[in-house]
Image (cartoon, rainbow, N blue to C red):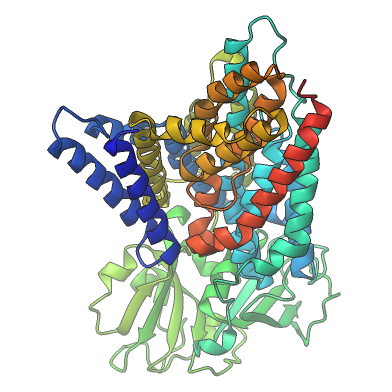
Length: 603
């Protein structure tokens, strides 16, 4: 290995050190390191080759990275139609403890990921868990990392569970045309025991080490306590359910004050009270919780003015506006001020310095200077009235567009079809990226999400980190550093087949954490097969070990793309993965190295 290889190894060591300290963003660190490597390649001239500009940009056209980008659009369609809430209710339910929540998530995700591609599966569950955590008052960081790990563990149980297994299976067919191909469930003999060990660790030990990065909502931190009336829609799924079953009992930052039914008021509503069509529910709470309340299927604002708004529902959002002392609205009720006619907006809630407003109907509330109005209006309202003398302050509430519930089943159908096509479409020449692109296109064509919503949904930081990771992996390969390191580590094993198998696993695991899992598997496979040939050992257990080691990546966010996908939603630091993932990596290594020679004898 020449100086070029040592230089790349040194740069990767600096990158890992910078990521561990968490002082600079991962995207800046990785892009900066790739830039330095390319500049050094240019300055040293044609006599040395480290990483060309073209090679540095190869990650930007990688199918895996592009698939992740497209999946953001698919997930946006699920989110905008309210499908994520429905999925969360069916899969996660309403467990009464954090342990119960983790159990309700771990088992379905692990089982599904054995047959479905990990990337779209995790992408689908991220907004589901975010939405569910808000309702249950649990920090998303307690569930996001287990989500990624469960998908990885399940992916090791079948040949199609992860793309790495397919890569190794393809390499096996190329090298051993006279031997049977690796069977669909063959890896399950080791994948299932590893999944059981991994989930046991996450349930009993790993969950204690997972940090709580984001505080849950606290109603006492916001003096703007709104009074809001919602109505139960006739024919909706909420009719006939109790308050507890409808998920309206323990909403964070929000409480159900009373129910108005047939002109009678029911105060101090109990959890077993059943809901009837056209019940008017009076809530008191902060704006963040009201946004979530608006997304519950079967509830609508009690005022009938919203249906008269001159704006399509997808173009509306919630806006907060503070009534000024010079506003003509002061001293008049909402109805007398003809609010909808004058401003093309509807008042759905009013906050008054933390006081409870006792007027039964929104239209009867007499407004005062300083009242904060929660409006449903066209998104252009903020710009139009930013400098109006009628309001002190006008600001849009983030992510407050009401879901298109009528398209929820359509969005779920598109997602299910995309996953099935990605899983079983390979004989037809359809890859995951084709299925994802088709799913995203259908989400846009069916108006499950709009073009602007799709564009704003893409997390560019994640994509930049993935693409930069491919570039660093390419630099290791181009300079020969990867070959030299791998060969040296395997040579340490000497002539012992079992020790050689252990070194193959550990080497693959290390490379998976530093580069991509597919690249690590492709790099180690020929070296492992050559080592098995020299020892007179069966190469199949070596191939199986590479499958497991390349997939079982838990201790860095850059080694496996689902780890990176949950990093931002969970609010994790690089060191969090090291603390939780290293013990899990070691457990997987011990389990695999111990069981593989028993299941598939080495000689």
